Image (tube, rainbow, N blue to C red):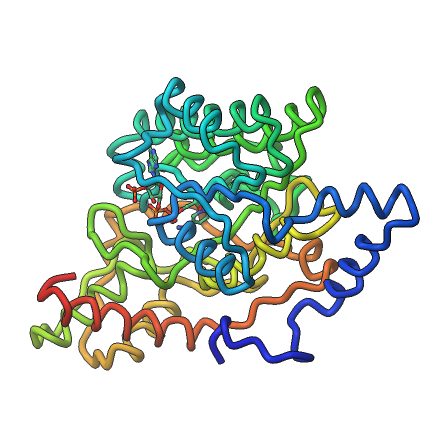
Length: 352
Ligand SMILES: NC(=O)c1ccc[n+]([C@@H]2O[C@H](COP(=O)([O-])OP(=O)(O)OC[C@H]3O[C@@H](n4cnc5c(N)ncnc54)[C@H](OP(=O)(O)O)[C@@H]3O)[C@@H](O)[C@H]2O)c1
């Protein structure tokens, strides 16, 4: 079943209805505070990065939930690195809620080639958006972190309290330092200015609107592209980066979007919260699953001269499950959908 086809009484958020009802009761001060912190259906919402994989999923999720007062800007209309332009946008549009899903994002190769750009762009984007949210009196901000902000040698599964307890993975250090700064900025702005918000930390994401560009794609979409292309061209061998022993956790972006909207509507979410499936697979296992879904029956060559990245990245999702949230799209199913979407994209344009 697709996420937009929710059936009444079959909610994935068993405690959500209860919390919502409680927050709407006007008779207590606590309830009034709770109401103030919910995402109002008519409130003006800015989804930054709405054309990206995560931003577009959040936008779809909001529209499916009946939120209509949503404002968006593409990078060409509003470069979020430009402080003056961002300030002008917030003065003009006066958003009440902000989902910050705009960022410079990429796979291991892009991160290694351009660490300075990953650091600069992300620091600028998030500093501008969070600071202007504070100045404009935004009611609630959602800042997307990433599991790569955990230390390289982090105990597994990674709990939120392990942040900043060790050295980062060097292949994506620029990106991770910027993202950590964003999470800390959210904390500091809450402490000093009372800016409300949440910083979800997602595991590796994949799904609709993912990039299949070999220069920027993440591992799962890269594998989908390689195997589908090999089937289409009749290639008998596919080369994959690394040794295949690294372990990764994956979540379909529609599940992430549901989690993020859930957190923004929650009256009292934790400030920092992991969002993932809670289980990981080796890259070898993942490659085998993608090969099967694509119908590839040839050989795999592992290029061990290329880096594996962090040895293991698996989130402890106890906080999220404690709130009553569980993802619904299994990895096999999600891979099947992604293979189908990539094939559709190839068919539509003649190229990916
Ligand atoms: N993908 C993952 O596996 C993953 C995992 C964990 C966390 N996250 C987090 O999720 C968020 C979104 O990631 P994503 O995968 O959706 O990335 P994405 O598909 O590359 O989308 C990034 C979006 O950011 C926008 N953007 C980039 N630079 C901009 C700028 N200077 N000004 C305005 N907009 C700009 C792009 O706008 P245009 O389309 O207009 O160019 C695009 O819409 C990021 O914060 C990332 O850290 C992603």
